[in-house]
Image 1 (cartoon, rainbow, N blue to C red):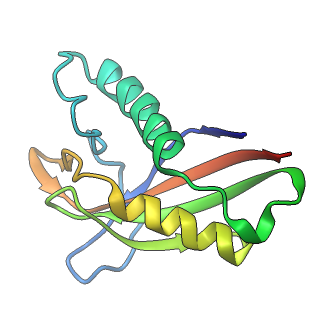
Image 2 (cartoon, rainbow, N blue to C red):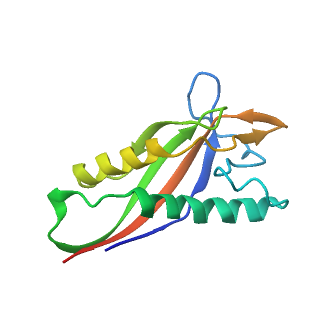
Image 3 (cartoon, rainbow, N blue to C red):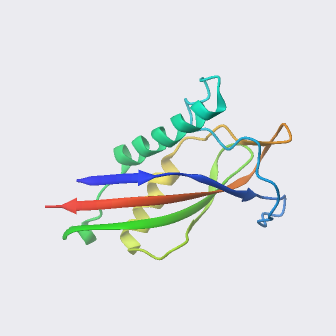
Length: 139
C-alpha cells in the first residue's frame, strides 16, 4: 500500500535565461488540468493539490527494488512550470532511493500541462517545490 501526502508551494519566478531569481511571488500559481473551473483562486489551488495527489496515487508503481517492508520519508522535489504549463527541470532536493526517483520522474512526466502561472497578467515560468511525504508499506 502507498500513502502519499503532499503540499506544493511556489518557489520563485524564473526569468528568460532559466535562472532562479528572488522576486515577489507570482500572483497565481499553476492550476492542475480540470481545476480552473471554480471561480475562486483558493478553490482552484485546493483542487490542484487534491488532483495532483490523486494523479500520483493512480499512476505510481511501487518499485521492485524496494519491496521490503515499509518506510516513511519526505522527498522534496522541485520542477519548473513553463509558460505553457508543461513541466521541466525535475530535481530532487534531497537524495532518496534511485528507483523511487526514477518512478517519480516517470509519474511527473505523465502529468498533463497545467494552466500556467500568472505574473502581472501574463503567463510565466515558475519553480514549484513539492514536498512529497510518502509512506510505503509493502507486505
